[in-house]
Image 1: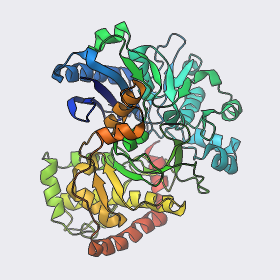
Image 2 (image 1 turned 45 degrees about the vertical axis):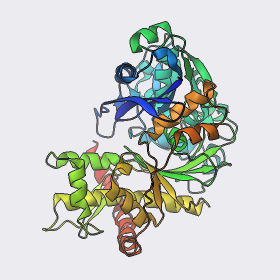
Image 3 (image 1 turned 180 degrees about the horizontal axis):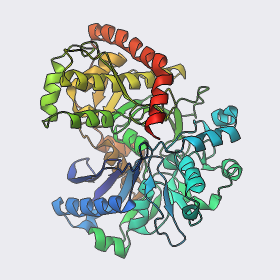
Image 4 (image 1 turned 135 degrees about the vertical axis):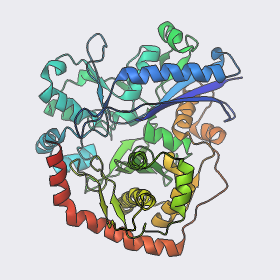
Length: 500
């Protein structure tokens, strides 16, 4: 029997699944880790943490598979977006990877914005310049770590490091490349205009192709480290948002997903690149040429809830869910702004931080936990509104990520968005999407539609909006937006003061 492997390299964990061609997961494994923050606002990870977790999870998954590794037909990846992995001429890692949630490059963002006009960014790049993207992180290294920058010969993305370790080849795909700010999204190639203007050698960046392109085969060295069969097909894969969409079955224009992972995203599929005059969303390439996604993103979604959960006494997430469910919408008059490490949509500001508003003597830890859930969902509602202004609408949303494991949070989302939500049977959508690419690249499937038909199934329950709750949330949502508008200068000054 043929099997496929999907590997998801996340910000806080790595996951591996082995799935058969009928869509049944036969084995899975995961390894949690943390990113480092040596300075307030910094977020980075050592690549050896990823590779160690990858080897451990592959070996563990193979040990659970009731078949030899030789029956795995293909391997592919889903990866955290935007991060900067830098290698020297001998392909040695120069420094820890700078992640998507890193906020150190504010000065570099301003520098790049002075070089390129807003019209250029809107019409050519289709994206705002933001901290944590590969290009801004690379410029930061050049300006602040010149000795290290002088050694750089390769600059690429997190999942592609694992791919290189497995097959020895350096390459990337359209979807991940389009999240670097160094890529021409409309013409699917590295942007010589951008790189020349910033005096960055185009040779730093690897060859780019579709997500189902075969990148290479498992090397002897990687086979010894992982237990994989030498010569197994290794397929490009893609950015986590794109692979997650595939794993949710969202592959056609008009379909949309909402994800609450470490960060949170609302992602719309499109057959054209969407221009946003306000530059408060992101438009990236999808899994193939001629397909795009437009997304709004909030930086601290599940991360915000995990942060607050760690403040509370130890306990079970399900038990906390039950206590949260007993509370009324609005958390007793409490608001939470989830900007723990800056924000993208709609504020595009790395220099803001979070805030509770409305604390009183009756406020409990459970009230605050619910307020965190609501605050994250309000932030995602702003993403939906911004995308709606661009003409992107969806009659339903497919929910995924850690937030989709909480029935309370799912119903809360439906009530706040006023849009029905559904979920897939599998909770590992990014891995599923990666496995689908492995199937396409290795010839197991002949089309993305065939792969999704085999792999994607939906749960029976649909979370439909409660009109009464939606009315209450509308009042709080207006106050949520006013809270930021009225406090923006104070929040930014306080954030910048705390980083000195």
